Length: 71
Image: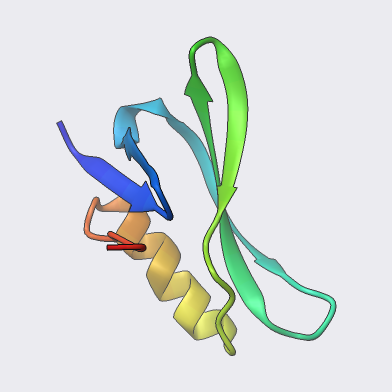
């Protein structure tokens, strides 16, 4: 099983329903990960980055199980 970590939350990628890059009001970007946990849909956000390219790379790394933020 492949896992990801965002902050203090560690979860299996099999629980993820979507991974989306979103902008902030101050022109930065973050990745929002939605997943099911205990029958509920929950979302997690990565820390913001300066460029969309950085956020796209972060989203790609999450999707492939090689993102481990917060360690």
